[in-house]
Each structure stands twice: as structure tokens, then as C-alpha cells.
Length: 120
Length: 289
Image 1 (cartoon, rainbow over the protein chains, first blue to last red):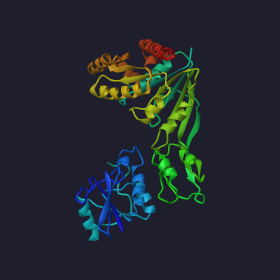
Image 2 (cartoon, each protein chain N blue to C red):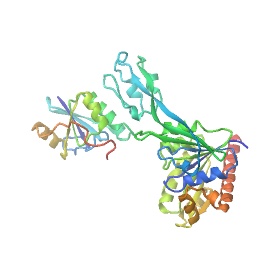
Image 3 (cartoon, each protein chain N blue to C red):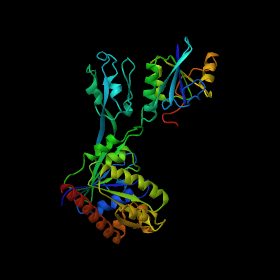
Image 4 (tube, one colour):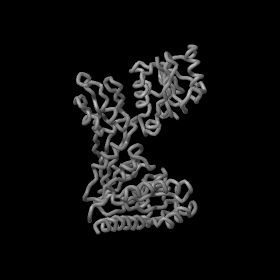
């Protein structure tokens, strides 16, 4: 199973990006193989509108079943839920910290967007 | 006299765009049409009495997908530069509230699965007051994109009249949409550091659009002289200075135009109109050569 994390960097020790739609990068972690790939999100980072929608589409296309991020807005939430992606909000400092929390079952699944669009 | 399109704009909000637009509309020789393109908070109409008005509902075409025809190829989502469509091998999800109604998704859909439905975004009011024709656009609450409504208001431009367009503040899409196709732009500012900062942004915007423009300083004498200096350095015509005058504010608070309340202001605005017409004509002549 693949988990997508929002991150400001390109490695497991990189800070978790609190923003979803305008996250700098997505780190997609494969739980089976313990490997990961990094997807750049610069196009959506600079989009005037619809960043959440397009970022959600990108995450779904990566085959992720789970998204771990800081916050998620209403439009992104709709796209991700429609595609069956589970969303977890966390204030963990780094990707690896968030991954550990997920593995320990300490993250709670979000049942709604936790911020408005364009919150940051 | 030939028709004319003048846009009254500013970088900063609250500098006096509507004051200049309404007074100019009253002082200009008829036929005059005043178009309020500040559709998120139109206020030019407040200065005119009306008996009756015509109201039109403004809609934009937004896409609707026929799920039986769609094969989830995602061409529509790839094409949409407004990021309105999400598609990941499924029937696309459409966030119609963000759509600009360009119709591109229909054209690129290989299965002809997309059709258009009309979605209301606001209204247009049209009325006459003392021989002056006034058009106001009003965006519905919760609609995030105003340029389609600005374009709708601009379809009411009377090519034979002097058209005065009151622009929204700022320098973003709604302002650019208002300015496009204008013969002349008037940038209203105030003699303060904020006024100058945002004036510079507005000047860059108008230069990009290659429209002749001049600057009006409102509440002149209330701040400093840095706007005047800037205009001098950049060779920007300073076409009017409206003094910081309590009588103007008092008339305004009664919903009265300065040109009606204070006789000498009529002359100021008649002169402003003359300068605007000259700028537009000089530029038109320059283009022909």
C-alpha cells in the first residue's frame, strides 16, 4: 500500500508540509517495499486557483490509498474521498515522524476538511 | 463627437475611483454611459436617483458530463487552466463555481461527452438618470470569479457614447478585464506612501496593456509630494489634482456629486474630460502613423 505525504523536502527527514494543495512536494511511500518516490508539485504551488483539486488528482494517480498531511481543504477533500483515499491530519514535524505515528495507529482519519480553501 | 472608452482605476482601494468616475460622467457632454465594473462591491449607482431599472440575470456556461459517453480519458482536466476539473481515470469531477466558462473542455473532449449548462453568477442593472445611462454589475455572494461578469457589463458599452468604466481596485484579473480595449486609463491615487506604492503596480499593469494613461491625485495637499515626483521622473502626465476639500466629503456623505454641489468642480472635471480625450486621440493618431 502506498502513502502520500506532503513535504517541503525530498527525504524522510524532511519537514512535513502543513499545506496540501500548495505543498512543495509529495513523498509517496510504499509500505511493502519500504521504498519511496518524490513528486514535485511546483505547478500547483503557483496555481492561481484549484491547487487542491489538481494536487488531489496527482495523489490519486500515484496510486496512494492514504494521504498524511497538515491540513486539507474542502475541494481536495471531495476529490480524495471520491477516489477512496483516506486522509489523516497531523502536526508531526517530519515525514518519518508522521510515518511512525501512522504505523503505530496513532493518527485519526479525517472525516471532513479541516480548513477552508486558501487558508494559508 | 466620436465614442470613447475611459477606465477609472487605481492600485489602492479607497483613493476616489468612484468619485472621479461619477463626477466625470456628470460633467462630460452627452451621450454618456457609466459602467460600474467593480462588480464585487458596486457603488457608483448610489449617487444617482432612479425611477425604474432593467435587470438582467448573468450566467456563464459550465460543463456537464454525460457519464454514459465519458471514458475517463482526462483530456478535459489536462486542458482546463483554471484547474476546475479533476479526473483520474474516472468520470471527471467538476467544480463549476470556479469555472470561467471558456468552453475549452467541450472542444477537447474526444467522445463529445461534455455539454454546457447555464449557471447564474450575478445580475446587471441598467437605468437612466438625468439623461445619463448607468449600467451596474453585481456578482452573487459566494461566486469567486468576477471577470465573466465584468465582460458582461462591457457588452453594454455604447460605441457612439462616452463610456466611463469604474474599475475594481487592485491590479489583478478583474482590473485587467476592465481595462482591455480601453482608449484611455485614468489612475486615481492619493499623496501617501501607500498610494504611491500601489500606483506603481497599476502603472506597470497599464504599460503592459499599452493603453495611454494619466494620473489623478485625490485629496491633494493632505500627504506629501512623492506621487508628483514619481510622475515627473517617469514622464507620466498628472492630469488633475483634486484638493483635500471638506465640501467634497460633505457632498459625498449626502450622496451628492461634487460637480453638482460645488460649481467650480464642474470646470475641473470638464477640463479632465478634455485631457482624456486628447490623450486617447494622440495615441490613436500615433498608432496610425
